[in-house]
Image (cartoon, rainbow, N blue to C red; front, side):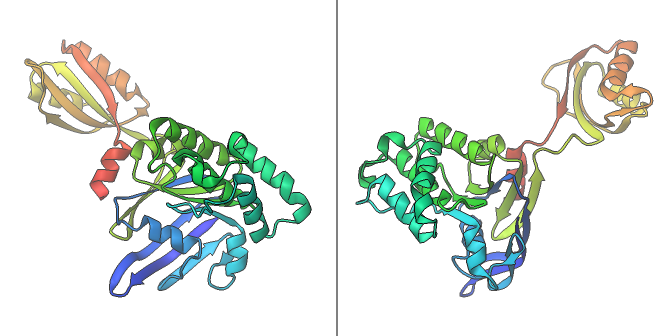
Length: 308
């Protein structure tokens, strides 16, 4: 749905993005993660056609943003970090105005605005002047204007920034609901937010894409297990390395005296059964009681810190 192919953006001699290639599939909610200055806003500005790339290609659907910008922009609704609102207009008048700009048929405009106001929970403020609204409502109006014209794609730049905890939860619920009918790409530096909402995460650092992670991916054939058991480290390592399912075993410091703590890379299962069952049976057989055993996975936070 959205594709960047070897995109570079220079601000004079300073790179904003450097040879970035990424893909946002249709129907997914995708998070763009990175520290401040990583290139998130630059990427979103390129995708929305706000400015052209220095090198490379931006495609929206099957269209090239440079070759057919009008068709591309019709497919996109955009919420910048600072929503482009007219403070002197009422919510309803403003949304009607945006519908006119996006060439919504006049006869259908009223029903379209009503639908958006309902979706964004703006009914109680539809006749209020935007300049008198709270930050949370202003963000909702910002998303509402992005929905005018029924775009297939929503681009949201830091949609929860500056909101209080209650407003943040409400905004996340709205984004989740929007993802049922739209392809959504949003930038954030809040890891928990991205993990809650997204099916895929793209991490940028210093203008480069350093990682693309499918959060829906099924566990791989191998697992990493952390085991703490009573006994001598060397004896336990030698015993566990004898299991066919154990591909690698190493010891780490154990916080409990008289025990050894081991990190094992194992086949999740083989012809002998599940790795966890085999390890349990082996340690029970050599009288090495297990104090703890659990699967270890890299958290999104660990991946982010390692790559930025």
